[in-house]
Amino acid sequence: MCGIVGVVSSQPVNQLLYDGLQLLQHRGQDAAGIVTMDGSKFHMHKSIGMVRDVFRTRDMRNLIGNVGIGHVRYPTAGSASSPAEAQPFYVNSPFGIVLGHNGNLTNTEELQQDMFMEDLRHVNTGSDSEVLLNVLAHELQEAVQGHRLTVDDVFKAVSGVHRRCRGAYAVVAMIAGFGLLAFRDPHGIRPLVFGTQVGANGQDWMVASESVTLEAMGFKVQGDVAPGEAILVTLDGEVHTRVCTLKTQFTPCIFEYVYFARPDSVMDGASVYETRLQMGEYLAEKIKTQYSHLKIDVVIPIPDTSRPSALQLAKKLDISYREGFIKNRYIGRTFIMPGQGVRKKSVRQKLNAMSMEFRGKNVLLVDDSIVRGTTSREIIQMARDSGARAVYFASASPPVRFPNVYGIDMPTRAELLANGRTDEEIAREIGADAVIYQDLSDLIKAIQEVNPKLTAFDASCFDGKYITGDVSEEYLARLEGMRDGTVPVVSSPPTRQMDLNLASSS
Image 1 (tube, rainbow, N blue to C red):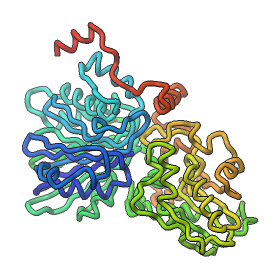
Image 2 (cartoon, rainbow, N blue to C red; image 1 turned 120 degrees about the horizontal axis):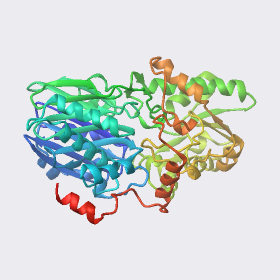
Image 3 (cartoon, rainbow, N blue to C red; image 1 turned 90 degrees about the vertical axis):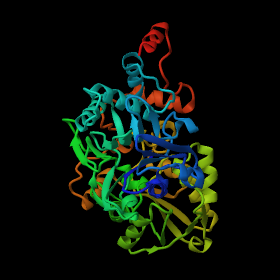
């Protein structure tokens, strides 16, 4: 999962991009990068780390221009944590293009083979985002009929990307001397929203992963980029939009509403905060009907994502809602930290239990989800150490039983606590007296209560149904092998003499 932002403005965009990335920091803590464009020249700075650590005053001064894109990175399956993997990526032909990508391609290896043998392009990292950039560059080169690039050429190139790429991708890109391009995959799996404001010398445009980025900086949200749609803002301020594929099937990622998105964002017409309130409503109803034998004295959320659900659940059950954990704001989100050891160590640094809220009570802890169980196990033990008599654990989402292959770092089935276990076995594993999961049908209804137009979702981590239709058992096994090191990370095909001769002729 990553965060992306792009701006076309009547004034310098470096501060707007920096502030935008700060607002998207929850979507990625591994690396950050900004590229601005001044005329036809790109200015780039990117590195490993949080936004506040990557950019210094001298870096910001060098990011000149009124057009730019930014990216915060969250590493996915098989990706390395190195400056080379930080985005945006750059390619110099044709025209010069930079690109930032949120999501994950599911046919990366196939694309790399085609790229090397047919497109005559080279990819230097294991990142599928660099592959996506080179696909776009090749399609743009194929689309241009003359020496002058046109709007139709750009949209034709995006159509080529949709034809060749599978998986999830929300993209911001810049074409040197031409403008800002944003597009979303035909399933609309990853979010992308756009908006405008009246700037100092004209109309400004912004596109970003979440609406909060626009609203916090004075932009008025115009809407979400539709599945398969591309938006092009040229340097002279013209805005063009087009759906660049004949077939779309709108299935946004349901886990965005559960965990990743900020509660003050609106995604595809649904307030994230309202959907989480509804999750609490449905979860409370399940407790009423199926777990009425539990004697619950207090409802306590695991900060921060689960607060709306826990609050509404407590209200519906007429049980006291209390804050029992104090969060250290300077520790990152444990779910998106690479490595089990780092996640486990950070839990106790991140949360501290207040004994007065636990001592002698039957406590219902509410979290957004249970993925690996590391955080849940540590938190339950903290509640017991603080004197809780009984600890029940409720998840606002269903059991995570399957890998997510569309940009969320949960690729190994063995890591997923719920995979192959019953609710009772899960409770024993994490040390709870009972575990209560949201039903998937209720989770879907919770979101549809807020926006009935959302009729289908990617819920593959809950139901194992991969909406792109190309995820096989072999694919999942390879992802797991890349994660545990038994299979090499995806890279360019081996070089042969024939390949060298072909490459040298380009």
